[in-house]
Length: 274
Image (cartoon, rainbow, N blue to C red; front, side, top):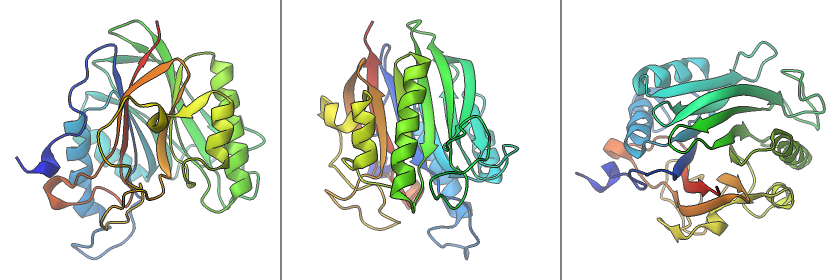
């Protein structure tokens, strides 16, 4: 089997939970064979997810047709919890795919990343379009533990919006009162102000806490080019203090020789304190 077809993480055993985040890159018109073409990348995304078999997968930047493609191709094993950023829940989506064999969805919610988080589609802090977070409270069938999983995509242009959004994410985690994993395209590097703000709220970068780093510390936005060690990690998995992080990875896999996205997937295997 080619190296690019070997999973980085492999099977996890309870009480471990495999969390994975991937900006799937929204579909745009491209010539046949272009590395950014969704028609080319779709099977690579599916191959990546099915071989890595995350317990909880967060996705960003998925248009409804892409979400439909993934839902159909991944099959009934993964339950989709996806919401668009528009006022009626349409448009570009962020959300979760959850392994039904391992976790049960107890509650699903979404919040606008704005001063009015309960008003879907609202904007604040200078964002060009709405940003939002999609979450689920899940129960681990193997251990009985409950935790909150959140997926989001912070603003690309406004540092102020990213910082205020991070503050809001910290409040959401505190209000749920459960162990939590927050997975995102943060659109800013690890260690920057939004990451630091979340750390102060008790939501910390899994990479810095891991017992083992499976891969080199690659940047997560290679844009279909060779990945660079020490590049900016703008995608990441953050966890609350109850989590022990067993291992982490930034994916360098190209199933079938195809980059799944212009972003690299990020993995973290965690277990919650009893």
